[in-house]
Amino acid sequence: MLLTAEVMQEFLAKALFGKDWQKNKKYVVHRQGNMANAQQRYNSSAWFTYYTSMYEKKTVNPALNQGEKTHTCNVVFLLNLQCIGKKAEDFMLSTLFWDEREDIRAMLDHLNCVLLETPRTVVSAPYFQDGANTILSYETVFKISCALTITEELPLMPSLELRGGLKISS
Image (cartoon, rainbow, N blue to C red):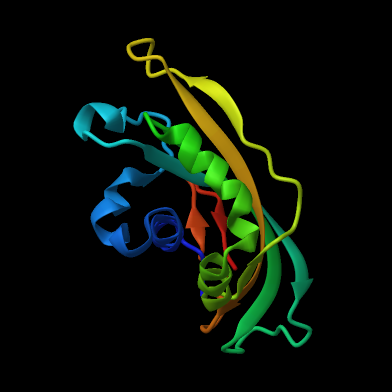
């Protein structure tokens, strides 16, 4: 399974909101540079942005050959989570205990992942939205190890033709 932004959104919504995750999933959004402050759109106690800042490949499937159908590698990645709103500090401090929660372990196990036991810090920082609405946000980073599997043929890069007539083929 590939850990897409959509998969991460569902995991975080379940971890943060429990059984109410589907109705509250809209408060967990993938971070973008031009995001509007969700506090202005929704009357929520908190909203969350997330992004993955690093993927580091640790191991390789030893029988990796072109034409094979299953490819697996172990990856460690950093999942960054930011929370803004009236209950932001409460939500983020609760993430310090995620390594002790059975439901978090089970959800990550379902994704072939494990939350690494590393020191986790929650930091506060101002959230600026073009100077229009400065509020305080809380942020943390999770280090997660995951077995990524692709069950399809690995594609070769296609031919590229550039304006100057240079053609690069695979």
